[in-house]
Image (cartoon, rainbow over all chains, first blue to last red; front, side, top):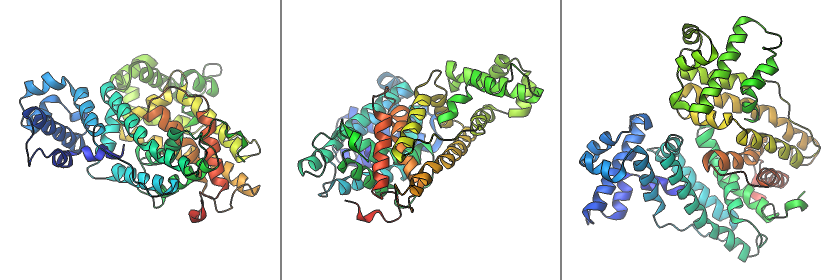
Length: 216
Length: 216
């Protein structure tokens, strides 16, 4: 989720070094096409997204795009998959609250960044089964990487050892997606930090273990 | 959010008593059209939703539908507005955790119910500005009604008086929307109760006041 944004055009191209040190032709074409999909999506939206428009913008022959990606769903899925593959390790601040706050600030930056790539991809996932499944893979990949935050907190003795990492992560991050993606509200000071702090305090109290019955 | 589902066809019609004791012709036509929109949306999805298909299914002349609702966005907005107008008071269980759990179970039932009206409307809100704004009004209406849960908890001395009600409600409910609407995961035992318990324990600890700095 955080790095859907980092799949955006120039960043991806920079990271892969495609423009400075061109890799294989196949990979170069892929990056051109991914960049074109993102620009089309952000500028014109899903309804205007066609294989032909993407091919034209990418400067790639349309038959190449059809052969490799087949349709708009295939293009969207590859955009998400490109972001999924990137290296990324969560920040380590020394406390669960600090780690979740750092994570939430990155997610907020991705959800409010320009161009609104993440929001456009999430919107597109409601239109394309392939894009939807790619987004599920992406989230699963990211949540799996983030689990280390929770494991580290358990190792420090900050939270119960039996804490479900995924539940903590969803509790911390879901309010941001709710706010920006579903409620479509403008940024709100404190939102990211507050959601992180609330999830951390609930985790410390044992709310994300299998037996949270003893909570107040 | 909870009662998007109760706007579904037969329920709305039953509630309004339109079939048993027909009201005015205008209201009867509205209910027929709303029922038709929901059935079209659930059976065929947004892409197949047209004013003509809705009019045919509702058994209402198409010019009547065009005159009153203008387009698909107008139809969707009215479906959501019909749900927004319904009377609804949150359950009172005597504790914040109990109240939020009851609320979350209703939301889970709405998000997993058949036909998947709520999910279909949320998906449609990514396509239609009118539907999106109607959904925002709907959520705002529901969150405003739910705020009484938090106020009651503050009056009982369960949570700090300065607790932001909306923040507690978003923390409690967002994991459900995240799970079902964005991650598109199947129901998971304990999800609704856990999210409610986590938000309640965080609220008790003061995580949703303006000065949550003193949290662990």
